[in-house]
Amino acid sequence: MQHYDVVVVGAGPAGIGLATMLAKLPDLDYTLLEGGLIGESLRRWPAQTRFITPSFYSNPFGLADLNAVDALSSPALHCGVEHPSGAQYADYLSFVAQQHNLPIRENCHVQEVASAADGGFILSTEQGELTTRFLVWATGEYQFPELSPFPGASWCQHYAEVENWADFTAPRYSVIGGYESGVDAAINLVQLGRSIRLLARKSSWDPSSPHDPSLSLSPYTRGRLDEAVNTGRLEIVFGADIVEVIANADTGFSIHAADGRQWACEQPPILGTGFISGGGASQIESLWERDHQGQIRLNEVDESTLTPGLFLVGPQVRHDPQIYCFIYKFRQRFSMLATYLAERLEIDAWVLEADNQVWGAFGNQECCEECQC
Ligand SMILES: Cc1cc2nc3c(=O)[nH]c(=O)nc-3n(C[C@H](O)[C@H](O)[C@H](O)COP(=O)(O)OP(=O)(O)OC[C@H]3O[C@@H](n4cnc5c(N)ncnc54)[C@H](O)[C@@H]3O)c2cc1C
View 1 (cartoon, rainbow, N blue to C red):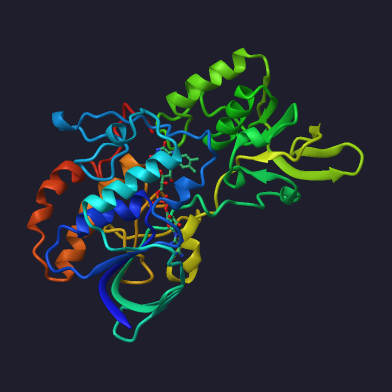
View 2: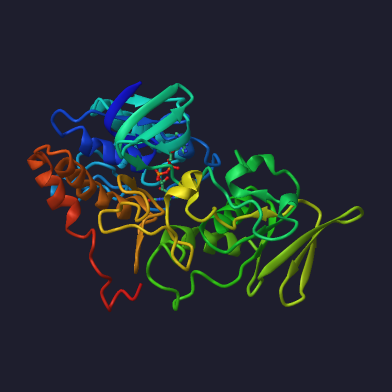
């Protein structure tokens, strides 16, 4: 059985980004385990989905590309576009992994994690067992959609299960969910000539919405939404708190809201209702503690408050009021965590000082009053 100082599970932006820091530490024995291919979740995005955060090659002027996972690379430069597709971004991640010679085992799904007698972890994987002193969980959320947000949701099709919106050939669809994925589904279908009813609890794009893009629609999506509305084929219904979907033998489906309104539709409704709380972290649920809102509790170095030696990176990290659900947010934790792991392993971490200066500056910044997020 092989033993490591650090094992990172997941080779998406979070796992690859953290590993670029680990790669700089001398004599660190570490590996990345990935259940699919590098960037597997991004490879599964619908063909039309694009990054909402823009990429721009600003690196020579000391501003890292907003979507970069290390300070030197740039998705804009690598992909040649401002808003990469999931597949383009996955190729960028593979490029970064190659540049840093990251030791990644692909097609190595981690099936079980157990505590080892010496305080580390035993991992059961598709490729056998291994042990590690520290475990970093970077399994994201995209592959863990919330498939039953209300009764009858099993009749619906979740955004995360869609390969290509062009496969939706009927003239009319209903989409449930008024944030990024629901609105993206509606926009893509309208662009393909379909008529869409978008059922949203509230507008996540009116001026009174919080300014944090983790809570309100991005400017990129707002611009595309305006274009979709202008076609006349997008109807938006606000205040729609959907509580049930019922399948009818004759008419198709009926969608029911808490206030008694209902809408009939011939095609299965499309769900843009999000992902299970904690996403991939729920695979090892018993190793985390949750707060009263169901968020995973982490200490100041993003370590599980229940299981010492287990760390979380990626979009599920929260330190109120900060929500780290975008790459430009959660990448700010990489150098802090890598430095902490080096200290615990008594490895000199001076090589990370420059990264700490680039990324660390804003990692724990409280929101300013002006931004009101
Ligand atoms: C549609 C959509 C659009 C988005 N757009 C943006 C955007 O424009 N900008 C932005 O910054 N963020 C965006 N996000 C947020 C997104 O959460 C992050 O960008 C990013 O994908 C998260 O990276 P990650 O590495 O944590 O997770 P992932 O990219 O999901 O990577 C997790 C990896 O872990 C692997 N894995 C899971 N479980 C196991 C296991 N048990 N064993 C081994 N491997 C496992 C998976 O195969 C996967 O490769 C978007 C999200 C969605 C859903």
